[in-house]
Length: 72
Image 1: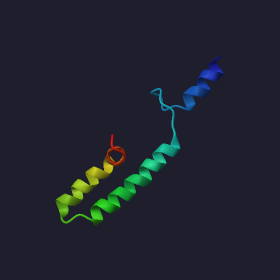
Image 2: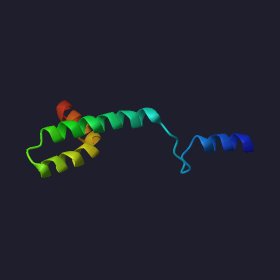
Image 3: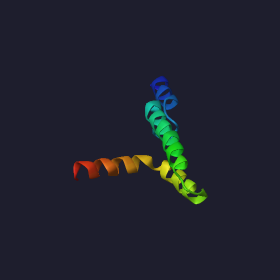
Image 4: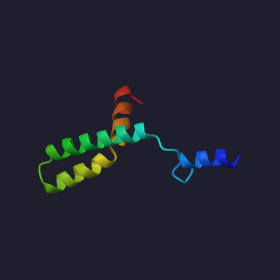
């Protein structure tokens, strides 16, 4: 029983969550794309800073746009 418990503990980060690399990869690529897009379309320094902050929460913008598109 101890071996089984140790094996589970090695697959987690120590706080009960398991690592899922695919989700982090998709978020990371989306973050990089959002940063590049938002900074390239910024008209000034502070708009670039705002674009960086928007890039941190890009999934929220994606879900909001999708729900607005389908009319919910």
